[in-house]
Image (tube, rainbow, N blue to C red):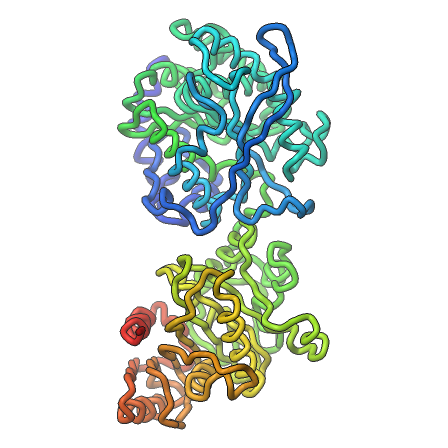
Length: 621
């Protein structure tokens, strides 16, 4: 078995690609991989997508923290040490209700506190993993085992990291978690142990050795471990690794402390060109030879071509973190087609506005799960899209992003209770990008947002635009008043929302198309608001609106020939009339399609949204 790892890596690579690494190149990879009940025990790490290395629009904040400790290596004299703490975007020190998982990271020989955050691409990976919902919002601590906060010679470094667990238990962890909102109810030893399921420790090089020692000393406090390029030195040292004896100790530790039942997970990693990879390979070989260390407790991954450097570390973090905090991480559980609509509406992540995700006028929808949702007058509702929408909004809400904005004040809602059922769901694109406002139909009787505005807003956000989906009061007049207020609200708050309202567009289907057309033709001033700029384009689908005033903005329409509610011929005549007035107008007519086809996924209309975007873009100033 001593050389088993070399054969197993080759044999398991194909399995790993099929089960663990599938989809790793896209933004949703991590949560998908983590949801698998079976994790391939060995394989190769997936490359970090370029977008994850770029600065995020939702960056976390790094703060220097000094704390009192003791010189455990020498005379136990009081000392002051330094750590750096990353808090995720949206972290509010005054919000004592929301709690965060926490990861402690340790540098290697010659490193220092804060090292992980000085490397901008690694911090960007943290930001983007959280922003994309791949991991829950996370507090991350970059600490040091050096008592003087500076490096020492190699043998002295060994002395200091061997004693680090005492600093961690008695000083660092209580200080950090007494200040920041982790799952520890207090910094008492009892509460720190009670919250172990929400705590992880990782490190690179000598930090990896420190991580193994944390496993040997502190599994009462820590559930997840990420040793990167290094083995356990509980017995032995560099050049005298005593691998078998160390694994014997770890195996006995697991058995004596009932860790199989209590839960633990080790993600062990090294690069194939790492200059000190041999100790990791030997450690992995020995761990994998023991029946005790099953995939839910121990995995070993290599970075193909990876060296002993922070480029490799970046990749290990990207691959490992989505596998952490899953057993107890209820907030990060994804919805599926089988999830009940009531569960989504009442999810604490959405607060009071969860009820607005689905029609307030509940008689206009049927089905009790996301997969069997049906909306009156609509066709081609795609369960996968519905699931993606609610998960995207949930992840973003949990990461601290504001995804819903009231457009009326509390006083206005008190005066008119129907205004409580209004607002804008925000699908954020790139900072300072232009804006699309999407309006669902529903015959002015209800708002069919889950099929007729949310999907459009999500797709527009994916290509970088800032998209809003309006929830409005039924009724043609009140709906237009709400849209006028939404346009005014976005102009008034453009700076704080980081959006560009020049050349904005209005989108709508059915009744929502009429709203977009009317606001485009008559302006906000006709519906109770100040006169704000008109849209650069309106996108009006499957509606029977015939009127042409001569003040229409550029207009695009998509319609079906089998629409029994709104004749395509009516819209065809309208588009011709707008063109005759010298205004850009375009129509796409899809043979055989009925009313309310939404994005047209799986139909002849699929792709119309790309054409509509192109139309909008050519009418930008």
